[in-house]
Image (cartoon, rainbow, N blue to C red):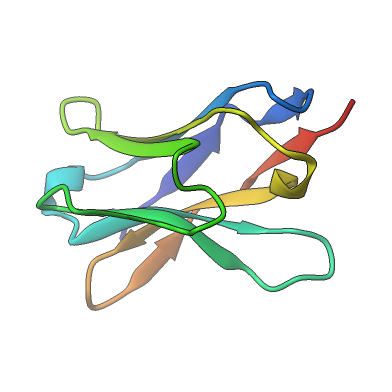
Length: 115
């Protein structure tokens, strides 16, 4: 069982930055891959970025060059640095842990980009 708790969401103006964090209840070095997904109102949940145990990263085209995913194994934390935020980035952001056998999800954190 893996518990995930997100933090760091909020309201930011276009062009601003936010850093999301996800605290895991287990050693993340033992997790196959972790990632961030988001869901905007009326839309399906979509991939934002993922990172594997071997530090291979993958980003949605819409966030490439603006978002950076990273892990801190010592703190069992997954982070997402979001720069140059746009109104279309507004969504609930979810942390995901993929152990191959099972997917675990956090409760989500709201990010709103608005002037």
